[in-house]
Image (cartoon, rainbow, N blue to C red):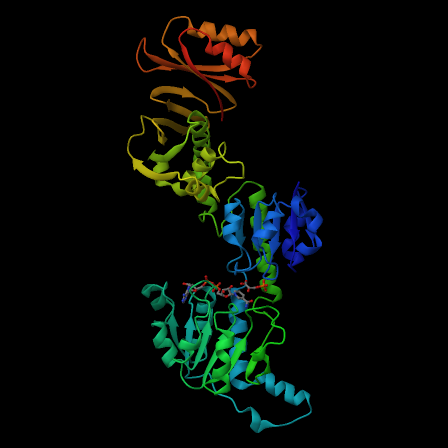
Length: 524
Ligand SMILES: NC(=O)C1=CN([C@@H]2O[C@H](COP(=O)(O)OP(=O)(O)OC[C@H]3O[C@@H](n4cnc5c(N)ncnc54)[C@H](O)[C@@H]3O)[C@@H](O)[C@H]2O)C=CC1
Ligand SMILES: O=C(O)C(=O)COP(=O)(O)O
């Protein structure tokens, strides 16, 4: 049973598939009301109100996934989640149209002074001359941040006869052309736009993007809109520009602090505001809730999530292709780690054959996680494996080769440790399973499953019998036994698969057999 805490108002209709699952227990409470049981939850679902801080994550040691029913994840400490191996997903496009429409509604309201006129009429006034506005037609709209919402705003602006001037340092010329907009520098947009709307995420680079210096570069009489994130337009910096009349009006759906309380901007007649309503439509809420609910179900079923912030994006098709190799990678890493239980500096992974054409990043992350698992006390998985490796000074790299050793595919892992290097190679045979085909310099063939015993010995007659006798005397049944050697009479090895794990006493008894040099338990 997986426990899911839903700590913000998320569409119940959208969450219905989760509620219907017998495997999932949903609790709807604010995190502050769930203090006593925070440690029991496997998943946390939020919108923008819940602040998912490192402190909160510390109280949720069982948490595996955070779902954001919306776009912005600036309320989630993604680094802290990643460090703990917690997957963070969002619903990137479910509320795009609603946010774009809200931006447009704000734009029209701003230039036609609709909120002010509305209040006036409700106050029993009829003052038509006080509310003369401007047309949108023929105006220059500056869009800063041209992703999903920015581009939807542009489509609507063109329908209104506006010309669109875009600043987005990550926008390609091809995409801009396709969407019929011109790309400019930030300074150019600031200089020409009659109305500027921001649609970037809140990042180190975008915080205060429209501050004193850049506001001074705008046209006198400019209108500004922020339906993205509080802080992209610096609220304090705006005040003198409103006081001087340089800025004709501002529309804000978002604030640096939400709710903004008794904010000085609220005193300006030409500042119009909404309480973070961009995504607050029935349609958007159903979309985003459905998206995160489906992703969560996939996650708990062990299927791929497609909208993760801290995992490489993986479609269902790609996932199905890499799934087998993902498991093989995990096993290669796990076995290598136990065999090399010494400090290591570097892991080198080589992909050959059919696997080399797939999305190997994910397989490498899985291999790294398998390698690190016996070495770290905390959770390590494909989310945080790269970060944990870095913390421990372990570097890793991927190579691609044609050398498949006669198999259709081959993954080879070489671990460089202090004074020792170890190589293990594996292949996946469809409908048959994983095979380890090379182990520490010896060609061999065994299934990496269950309780394995590695024995290194000199190649002498009678060794198999001696090992069998010792195990038999300790009531340990051998499921399979594979032998291999470098050369006749030289270094040889046995890999045994046992029905149960063996204790230290059995290992010592085996180590005492003449010509046996090493005995090691390996879990796969
Ligand atoms: N008010 C509301 O209720 C809602 C607000 N949002 C917010 O709207 C914003 C945009 O969302 P989407 O369009 O879905 O995101 P997106 O990721 O599709 O687009 C963001 C764009 O900003 C650009 N960008 C990044 N850094 C930039 C910089 N320094 N200067 C200029 N451009 C930069 C990126 O290249 C990207 O094209 C986000 O902050 C999101 O959280 C989203 C939905 C609802
Ligand atoms: O999706 C976003 O980024 C939003 O800002 C919407 O926030 P909300 O889910 O309405 O709290």
